[in-house]
Image 1: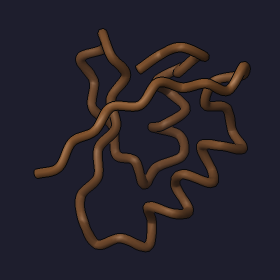
Image 2: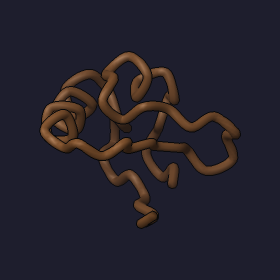
Image 3: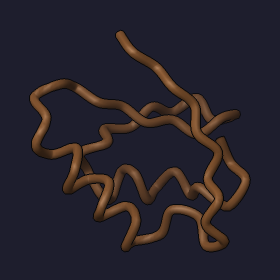
Image 4: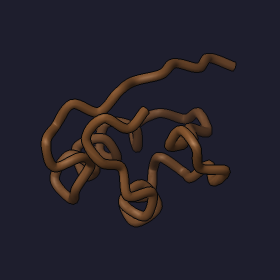
Length: 62
């Protein structure tokens, strides 16, 4: 399993447009891809726009 960390730099965080771009890019992959916000116990399916947006990722979040 590969893992990497990224700090969100966009002033608006991960809102609908960047979430859609992320989901569209990941949807082509056959792997099970999860995304998690630092400090949150939930891991969500990165192929679901609603799941990604439910994390409420803001600027500066990892």
